[in-house]
Image 1 (cartoon, rainbow, N blue to C red):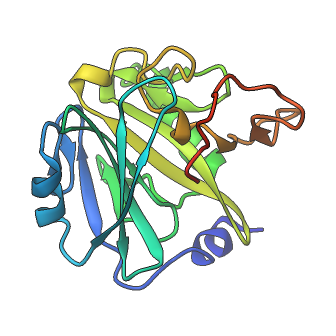
Image 2 (cartoon, rainbow, N blue to C red):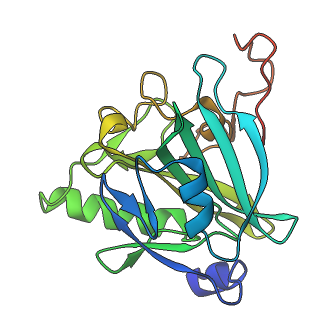
Length: 209
């Protein structure tokens, strides 16, 4: 499938446009905001639900959406302060970095953009154990999300306090729920995590999505 066709399959009308401000915030959201402040600036969105985002920490996840059934933004809080934002690949805002789109992209295209910047010594790209690329210095991890036509990119962004080893999905601070599910498409790589038959150590916790 051509890249244009792939992107066209997930375009939505009136997609919001947000700029990533590395380690500081994205769009109208600034890391450190309280839940009420986040809700106030997400114009046109409503809170859909709250959930425990990680079995090993007190991270609170809040899902904001368009209407009552279209999740668009996932905000994560520690002690009531915003520390992480993930954007839905279908209904979420179009996040840009230096004019480059990060949301709903063909994974290989965005990976090549990051690697080109890496080779030019503009960024230092790293990969977590489950194969997701990201840049600790930007507080950015790129995940994928399954859609009817394949997979598209879903940016996950953190503030300065979580940036250290944020691409490390075993030891970094990004909550477990953001690592579960469809994995970055690598040759001979696992399609999803956890793979069938894998024993987790989550106790009674279940991934919220």
